[in-house]
Length: 142
Image (cartoon, rainbow, N blue to C red; front, side):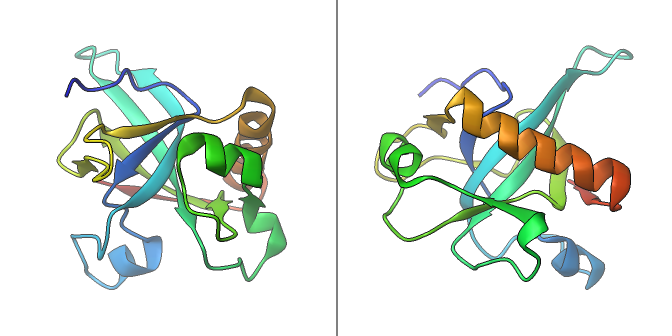
């Protein structure tokens, strides 16, 4: 299966390394999970695409401002389960696309679930930007 173009709003399957795991010395993620590409830029020096992803989790956030709940209609469209889920916006992983941690979705054999609805993605992006500029969001280089 071909790799998708890395565009903001695309939900990919990725071995996400949580910031607290990285701080604890871990180099590998404990599991693969859906993640939202929030930023995709071309690196000037070599033209490589650098992406930043935010993880999707079932665990309700301790701080409600640190996450955006995914509407059930969007989850259904992406083929995700029916449990409540959140996009965590106060941290992310940053890597050169496609990287070693991109995974295939077992049900489809693709690397992505599809795109978030634009209005919802804008909520995610606004939350991510707020954490990066005002609240010291954490980026983990991969």
